[in-house]
Amino acid sequence: MLRFLCILVLTFGLSTAMQAQEATPVDRSATGGAQTLEDILKRQEGLKIDDTFRSGQTGNPDTAAATTEQLGTLGGASDPDLWRAYRYNTAAITTQARGPAAEVLIQDGGMRWLVFREGPLLTYGTGLLGGMVVLLTLFYLIRGRIRIDGEKTGRTILRFKAAERFAHWLLAGSFILLGITGIITLAGRKVLIPAFGHEAFATIAIASKWVHNNVSWAFMLALILVFVFWVVHNLPDRTDVNWILKGGGIFGGGHPPAKKFNAGQKLIFWSVIILGGSISASGLSLLFPFELPMFAPTFEKLNALGLPQLIGLGELNTSLAPHEEMQYAQLWHAIVSFVLMAIIIAHIYIGSVGMEGAYAAMGDGEVELQWAREHHSLWTAEVEQKRTEPGST
Image: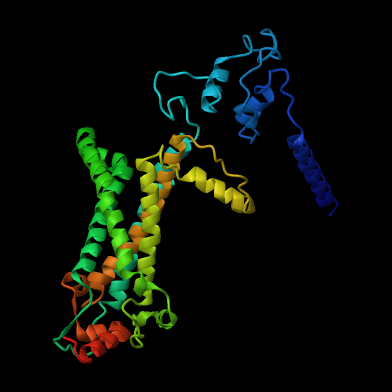
């Protein structure tokens, strides 16, 4: 017991001493404000140090140590001082180029962006898509195809008009093209260069970028059309709660009543509108980084609300170079796109092999009447009632 108390006291004493040492400001007067031998030794040992002093210190000739002293600088400005000034964008730089980013020679966050882009983003993004495919395959093997339960009538009912189907397929086709070309841009260097070589990849990459940049306009147009056509039918109502509680009748127990769009379809709709809108906004920021910066204004609003401080991030940096704007926008663009692609894979499954009769709704717009009665009974009843009213055709 006595030995345990001694160890506890020693541990507490060492911890307190280390905390006190960390809290004591480091005297850097001998180096003119630059790093000291103590800083170098700590870094070599892998210890965490506070290097915020480096961002604004480029050597002071008046306070620099003599050249005969340890870590003395020649005239107070050494090569590391110069590169540090480039890194933190404090050097007085003049260039012949005239542009918002011409004077930024070293952008400090570039490596963090590159490491995240080639590591976690690519790994977890492709893992999400692969995981969704595996889950849907297992679901199909366990549940099988969702069949029409009742006897087919041989009659059809108009579900979507030609303009609605055009908007849907424009959105679907453009999104698939954007997804393929986006993945090529993100993962091509790792996957396609080893498979096809640099020259072939260069051709594919240039074509992918051209398609991605130009097809994006079709996607944004279709997103607006789909919103205008269907927003009224996708507003939440009390029938959605019952549909969710019964799981849409997917695992048996009958089909819960639903209007033109059930709760599951409404979730898909709002996912496409919200996530697709966010993808479009970040895409525009990537196309026009100088005219449409996205993250500096967003960070300002978040700081004003106190949300970063609430979760311990402190105030977010609102002074971003165009390079940083594009890096943040590219990461956000890719992350949200991966999430939406996973959702759309599930949507494609249900609309094709997953449910009998579902594809016809977007194929020719006419669906089997029995299918409509089972999956959208409230909407079907409204349409049939209008057919029986005097003057209807």
